Every structure is written in C-alpha cells, then in structure tokens.
Length: 526
View 1 (tube, rainbow, N blue to C red):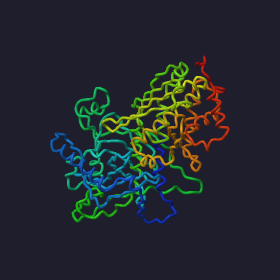
View 2: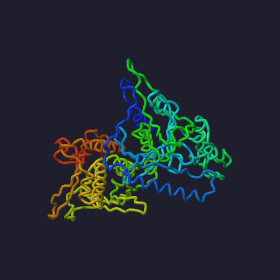
View 3: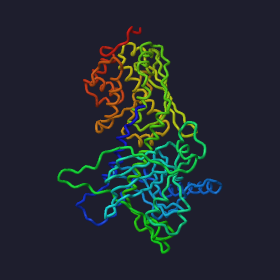
View 4: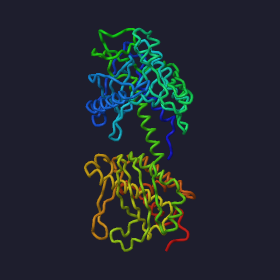
C-alpha cells in the first residue's frame, strides 16, 4: 500500500499554525477570535462529548481505586459551560472543553473529533516557551495524549512555525503523570511548578518487552524515568518576505478561572473550583491540536490499510487473463487506493475473477462483464466487500489486455456501488453519493438492468482524479504502449454518462475492445 509522504502530512499542521494568524498591521489589542459556525452533523454534540468524557473519567477512577501504581492515571475536571463547537481554517470540525488535571494546576483541553461516525477524545497540552505581548505563541511544544495520559505525539513550534516532531529517544509506553509530592507543596515557584508537574514517564513496568518495544524500561531499570525526546526536522525556518514583515503568531488562550481561593504561587492556568472562566473562547493552540489529532487519525488509517489483506482470486480458465493478473501483483493495493481516494471507502474486499461465454445468458448476452456482490460485517463493525466478476469470453478473447484490465477496475466500482445501495437504502445512498447516478435500461429478455454512472454534464470534473488515477493504473501494465489519451478514454467508458463522452473517446475504447489496438492475447482464444 502506497503510504502518504509524512512531510506533506506535516504541512497541514504548518498551515494550521500559519493561516490562523492575522496580519501585523491589525490592531495591537488582544482580540477574541469568533467561533465559526459548524455543521451539527459533522461535529460532536455537548451531550455526546459529556457522555464520553464522564464514562472515561469513571473508568479511570475505578482503575485507580484498585491500582498499586506509583503514579495512577491522571484524572480530569471541567465545567461544561465552556464547551465549544468549532472548526479549523481548513474546515475540519471539532469540539473542545478546557480541563485541569486533578492534583496539579496544569490546564489543558480535551478535543473531540468525529470520523466515520466514531468519536474520539484526546488530551491536548500546550507548553509555552515564549509569547508576544498580545498573547500570541512564538515558541512552544504541543503534546497529544489519550484521556488516560498515554503519550501519542508531540511537536515543536519555533517562531510561529511547526518545525520538529518530538520523538521518544527510546521505544516504550509513556504516560503523563502527576508528581503528588510536588503538587502538594503549597508554595512552589511558578517556573519550577510547570517543569515538575508536567512529567511524561516511562510506563513499561519492571519487565522489558521481548520484542524490544519497551526500551525505556531497560534504560530506567524498570523505573519511572522521564521521557527523552529527540527533534526530527519537519520544516524549514520562518521566512521573511521582501519588504513585508513576518505574519503574526498564533493566538494562545491560557484558560484562567477566577477563584477567591486561587493560589497565585501556583501555575497561572489554575484549577476550576467553581469560579468563572475568563478566557475560554476559540484558542489558536487548539487548532494546532485538532490538526495533530487529524494527523494521528491518518496514521492509524494507514497502519490499518497496511495490515489489511485484500484478495483477488484467480478462478479463470482463460490463459491470457490469468497471465494478465499475474503481471499485476499490486492490483489489490491499487484498487484499494483508488476506492479510498474516490469514495473515501476503506472496506476490505475479496474479489474473484471468472470467465465464461455469455452466448446462452439472455440477461447478460452482449455485455463485456457483470458482477455479483455481497458484503459481511464482523464483530468490530468492519465491512468486507465480496464480489465475483464474470468476464465474457466471447468478447475478451479478442480484446486487448489493457481493455480487460480496465474492465476489471470498472466491475469493482459497480460492485461497490451495488453493495452500498443494498446496505444504505436508496435515500441514504443518494445523500452519500449525490454525484453517482443509476440508470435502468432494458436487456435482451426485456428485464431491467441498472448501470451506475459517476459524472454528469454539470459536474464533469467531479471524478477527474478518479479518471486520471485509473488511466495511470492501466498504463502501468508491463509492456503496454498505449497513449495517455487512450487510457483516459478506457477509464471513462463504462462508468461515466455517454453524453459526456466524445466520438474520439468512444473510438479509442472500441479499438481496444476489438483488439485492433493494444496488447492482444497470443495465441487467440477461440
């Protein structure tokens, strides 16, 4: 499975940090950024967030009550009056709530993101090194944890730009912990309070892992050593344009709760004890955190894709098509990539390719191929698409190999859309795929058959990336010498509306179908 380049993923974080800024010629007075309107269907609701948060906290309290760990799981507290639904400037919706960590005076945020109907919450901590006079971040470290405090990732900002990922020097499990001995000291200098309370410790226990993924336990002898982080360069230095000053830095909101019992000698973030939150609107730091969380979702998905076992089974008797599949060993990965990029689909699939004559098949006679599809769902709600592709021997025996390969791709698309319609129902299907249309037409026995098309006249660019990807896949067939124009024509015919096809495209495709162009099968199958 082709992985995305990590550098490009990080550019999204850089964009979040930079595009959030306002220009320096704006007013010098600190401004509260407006909270943008968000689609209620795409963002986590207050009730959903509250239920998830409270369930997590109850689970941790129960675990801590019976645990003998030196450092129990961190526990969080908040005030739901300050719950906010917002979005990043690239349009990713998320919700957030300011929290404090029980036993310390560290303030942070819980971010709630929704993907494919599943809500995840992450703990986001900003450790600021320097701010401008109007409370904008210049240099800082950003940390992402699970609600239990388990370390996920960290990034460093220098001069308002995400420049480095902070990677553990030793492999292992790390967790944010509260040093209760320091936290219970009533008067600790502020500079020391932050450093001492903010501690990420090795959580591998006393026994090192035999697979070598708990190196921090070996280094510390099984103790709770503090994490050691190495800088990994992600991006260059902040550049100054000619005759133009630097863009200003991202805003920083330090959540401050007014409280008559608040101890000013503790870290100024404060813990909520019933007072009012004086600075709880759209903070720039949380946008960076949401970008980090989105990046982690992508990493998880890529790992999941790498582990998936898509299969394309050869049940062919046609030696030419058998040889064709053997020449395309990465066909399963390529199909998965195109399906994901086109429809956002990550379902596992099992494809079986067969061939037979359609001469006595009144329903499909004259067709190049047809597909039977069904699906299954496991206990973890993972979907698997199963499809049997039948190729018409009467046509493919003389067609080019490029044409046969394009036909297999097309049939997978049709199979997927058929399964989606069966699973979702017509109304939900039309809502999910507004630019996919089904047309009914009569076949030889007067019965009706549905065909799916992806593009209409008004939205002819909607699936241009799909067409281009499929054309490139066809051209990757070893030995082919067809032009990009021909590959694009074959990619389009069969899955787009006929009205959007030119005479030239139909001609190029037909030449491949008749075997007058491209790599034909040798010997011919009679």
